Image (cartoon, rainbow over all chains, first blue to last red; front, side, top):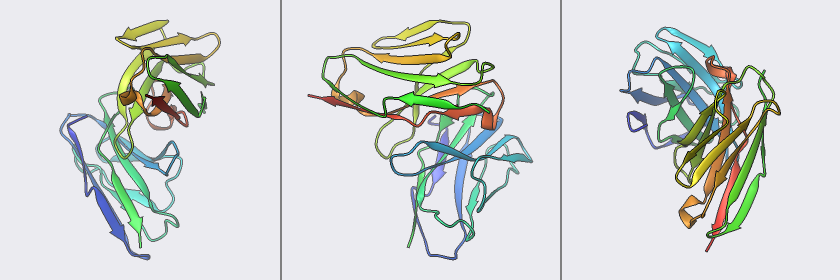
Length: 111
Length: 113
C-alpha cells in the first residue's frame, strides 16, 4: 500500500466551495475506489472504477464526482451539493476484485 | 446485495489474553474474506485474508477461520499486546468489483497493560 498516495493530508473548505482530493497509485492496479469514513464509523463506498474512462456510483455518490482519465489517478471532487462533507476520505486500489490497498487518507473539514 | 455484520463493536482484553472478533455475511457467492487493522488516524491495512476453499489460515499470532455453511468467519489474536489496540474491519467479496466488496462496521479492540 506504500504505492498509493493521497494529497493533501488535511484540507479545509469553506461552505459553498468545491474541493478536489488527489489519489495516485504506481502499483499498476486497474481498479480504484473512494470511501468515506466518519468518526467511529465504518467505510462507505462513494465511487469505484474498474478501468480507465469508466466509473460507477457506490452507496453514497450524491454530492461527489470523479474522473478516471489515467490508470494511475482517480481524483474525487466534493461539491457544494454535499451537505455534510467533513470526514476522512480514503482511496484504495486493487489489481483484481479482491484485496484492496489503501492510501493514507485526506481529512476534510468544512469551516 | 451483501450484508456483513461484525461483533462485538468494542472489545477490551488484558495483555497476553486472546481476542476473538466474529463476522457474518449474507451472500453465499462471497468467496474472499479479508481483515483490516486501522490505527487512529491511519489507513486500514490488510493483516490476513482467507478464501472460501480454505477453512483456517494462520500467521504468527493471528488466525482466521471460515465456516461457509454458517456464513461466518472469525479473527483470532493470541498473546495480545498493547500495539494490537486498533479498529479491526472484516470484509466479504464475491469476486466482483465495487459494491460486492462489503466491509463490516468495525470492532474497537483495546489491549490493557
